[in-house]
Image (cartoon, rainbow, N blue to C red; front, side, top):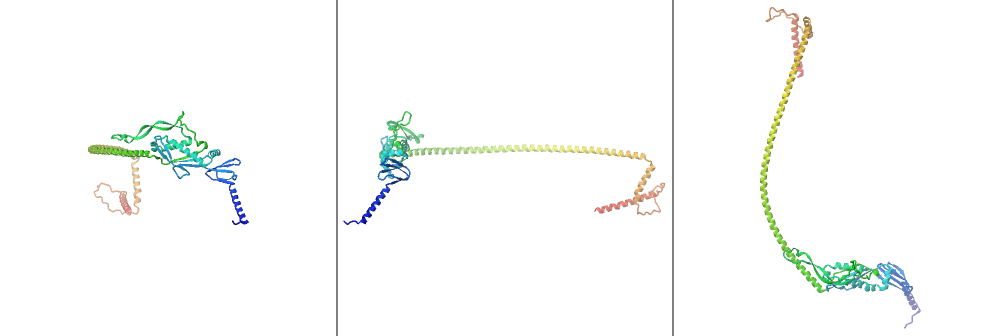
Length: 456
């Protein structure tokens, strides 16, 4: 054997010292993680600490123990995907049928330090806690609760009620039970028969079965045993039941009943189809009869409507003629009244005109009489010779201005044709008056012609 040199020995010693130092330093502390609860115990002093939050903590090397517990533990029966998994729970129902129920339970450990200390004192590890308490309690509750149901009752709709009973017992305490014969009500279909309207309806059937039933106290509430989880503060927060598996005989019973129910449903459907077809045929015949009746009523109503229309047309024509006659009569009366009013008005106008003419004539007559009386009075008041001289003066005042510029040649001879030889020869004044009158007339005639020409 070759001898080791001092250099090699020193290297080995240094390596051992480093390894021992690393192990010593590593044993001075431990690390806690989220989702776990840690039970730390110092064996020298007996001191115990509980850690529920993540962190780094010191410990006495080689003289302390750290035990880790999951804060949520899943216990599964019939599922290999879970940490703690066993086969599906085999149960015996009240009617002696058996079955297997795959189930999963999730338990939550408390955060209270005293409860964790008690769990560690009783079970010392997570494995012992799971196997000795959680698995055993889950099995007991499932098996005991299954005896409260018949196999047929469980597999025909009792799964949810079964699950609720499990949760209630794990939270509030296991039911205290007793075995007794009870009356079970089952739902079944009424017998099939022609003319039986209730053939598709459910009906209740009753039978006596030995079952394990909860014991009720004097207050009417269920008597419960001690809950093994309660003293440790462990809570169940989830229960999952997978598809339960019945034994072969129960499976055959359920399959046969299922097949019979299917056959019954088919027979009921055929019966209902035949009923509906008969009702349909009857309804179609009724519809045809109704249509024929409606058609006859329609023809009758059309004839009645046509006759009523003729009567209405005749009555309307009659009413029209009456209205037109009344209208013509009223128009004639109105025209007659209008003409009468016009005649009366004309008569009143003519009467007024007559009275006005009479009044005017009377007024004119009165005026003429008055003027004649005035003239008469004037004439009576005047001297004839003086009055004649005044008149001649007025005539001369009119005539002489019109004789300006007029040359008058006095005739040498004056022939009085047809005159009376006894008459006196007219005076110069008479002759001048005649000539002046002639001149005035010619002047007036020329003035009239000039005015007419200017107007045109």
